[in-house]
Length: 479
Image (cartoon, rainbow, N blue to C red):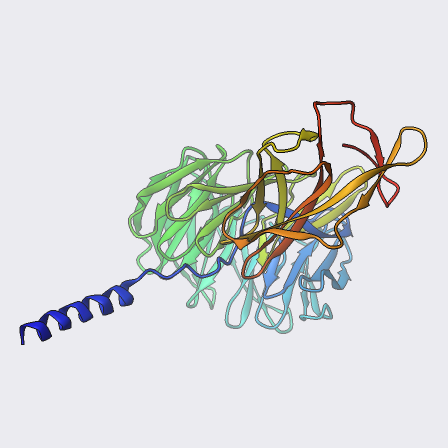
């Protein structure tokens, strides 16, 4: 009986070990650094402010007044639409189509394929954004008027005159329309145009508004960020940012990510307003950051993009482009897409950034070396997860061809694997025979594959002047 009890305990222990044995983490998804430009797409003019996204399609307006739709999977223009005047602001996404407007105050309603459904000349300056409700498109004017347009026909339905100009374009949810005014107030209006109260900011002009759940979030010019209840219009918390906030914040439900004018991205607890972390940005950024799983990425008014871990704020990676960035980033797996503007050409550019998958070889000693010397070959791989390495060698001999010219001639019929596939990224080489060697490595993981090769010369005696070698491709190599 005692032996049975001991055996049962041992068996249970082994089962528990098997049960709780740590398994390898799944292959990482989302953004992975370092990044490289995989492809690009040019378009005429400069993008205005924002790349709007719906699944695999991107929508944007350029300064000359052209609306573009890009198929981000095919990496090509799906359609374009020309407005009657220059563009003025970003694309607003609706349930049945998109909305854009021009500098003459005309609002356009387009379907998903770029066909004009309606256009409404308002002949009033429009400050660049709107929001769609159940039945109406809510559009603000610089004079402080809030207009409700029928979203299917564009016909004006009602208007509400605020007490001052509108600084923060409207947002809406659950039958309530909210907008910010230059007199430092947040106005609340019903979907039928009736006032529902206000929130006073003591003269500070509000920036872009975000509704999430039953709360309204926004920054102001006096270096504070606010959380206000939608129903009771009372302040829930206020946090200091160190700089005014002009761009749209984003939230993952637990945290808020805010970019302020002092070139800082801050992360606040959504419920309490507690500052969780902050990090400097390389330049000012009026653009909305983007959440990609457990990362937050931000573009700036420079050539640099930065990415941080949402939990810790630790920098995850950065990318430096050749041109200045001109909009928010968007994520269409496996690419992070950003826009640029080339002033010299007068053209915009979309860059498709993917993870940089590559491998290089380094040697502990430089070529040429004498035989029977220990040489450590190291493979440096990027863009892989739990990679495996396989090293191979092909030996050549040098045959003189003409005066001072040498040609490598392969001695071995095929490359020889010298270290089978494993997680070991180094190989120790003891070359015994002189010759010109091709040293190579192949790196693979669950999804990626890359390889590289390089020449290395082994000689019998001490260093001599390296001869000029002509490869089979006619290229010169100093070995």
